[in-house]
Length: 104
Image (tube, rainbow, N blue to C red; front, side):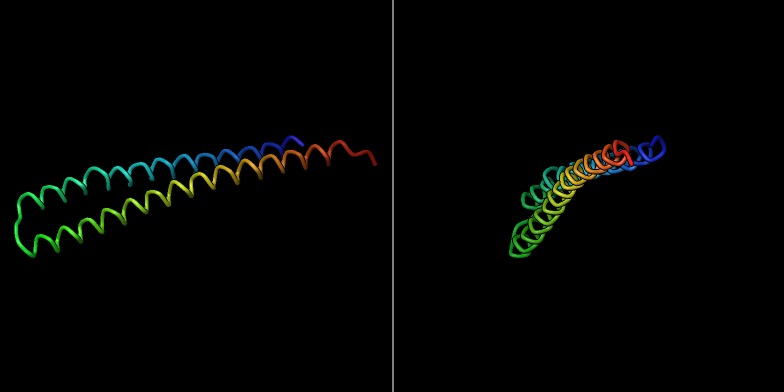
């Protein structure tokens, strides 16, 4: 049981680490949209007048929304990875208990 349990734990920790990494990346991407791209939008809007300015700012705003949406999707994937890995871990550990408690 020792090696199997160890492999289950290693697999579980890897999934948890991936979930944390995804959440870190999601936070960076969302901050990029909320701060950096928003600053570019504000600077462009303040420094440039005319029809071209409006079109450019609309495109920058679209990019900002797209990048933020990607960050939200990454955050959702992180949460799903955590939930799934928790459920699989519980199921695998319970399976081990059942297997090793049987008497033949």
